[in-house]
Length: 177
Image (spheres, helix red, strand yellow):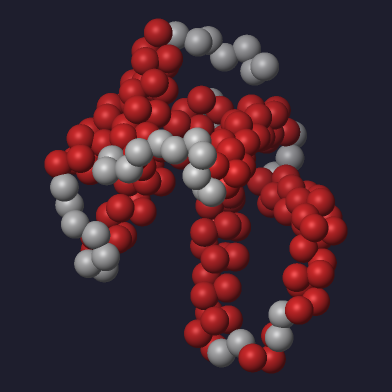
């Protein structure tokens, strides 16, 4: 859609990065299409595909609009689309029962893992191609594993090192001029 050149190194980088991310996620687990998680897995796949389209389509807007403008519209219209599905659940929340810790966690998720992530991605989209910006999503499993290892909720294993090497190789191949 963006008329980006699709080169062999980019294709190879995407495939290697995907392999590393899949290996990290699936290491020690098997794929079971009959499991109760299949609906969630399919929704995550749909989310990934949608995010890919978002990266490609928003690239054109980045030339004309400031990232804050684009993000404000994305979040506003996203809110409007989700609200009908979550309205009943939203009504059942007992806001007064939230402790300061819960409010801090909500603020952290909204500010850092949502708004700031999208904002940094928008600034990146002004400077690099959609393919390069998109490939960095493969770093998320590595970052999640590193945080879990840091807080002693997980251990560093050869599988994680192999996955990290594959992901970084993929990112390098896609990012290389």
